Length: 225
Image (cartoon, rainbow, N blue to C red; front, side):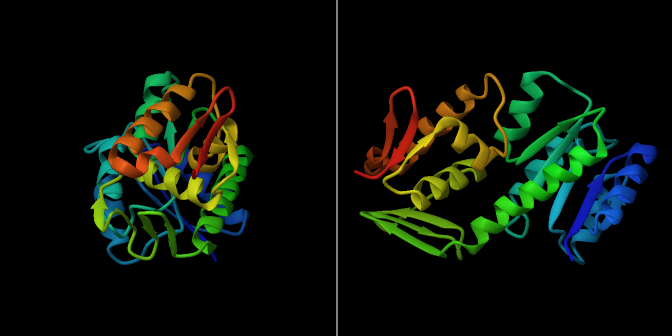
């Protein structure tokens, strides 16, 4: 059974979401602060995390940074819950490693649908091969590492997922919308800038191998010669 943890200080919202999750076949646990949440994940890890941005003590973005810096949770699916609707907050959460976001007020059925969709996507990534090699690039999923010319390359969570998606689809032209859906979980107007920024930094970090991340004008990107 899939397990979902929700960190939300509003008790009414937390209880509604917990009820919806359990009614949909999930095991679910709720926490009103980061401290209680981290005490629990020292015992067991969830399949997915719902994380509110506005929390007492450490806010959601601080918790997100901590989760993405921990090898145990660096690839764990995370959906941000926020009352803020500005593009800045959405992009900030995505850039820090969130996989999706839902703006309050939200419908619980939409939330359950997004959870199921994200678990399906991350499940597909987990089913793919642990080792991919191309020219001087080695992508080792089992070790969560990328190397070029046998030297390790340090990538952010989204850069890692972006490279993984492009390498899985080597030689294919991937439209921007497809990349956004696969890596970020959705596409929203204006997000193209974030994708371009991640492509730019990924190329830079790959060094000589950055040339294999190719731009297909007016369409998207392709990996390979």
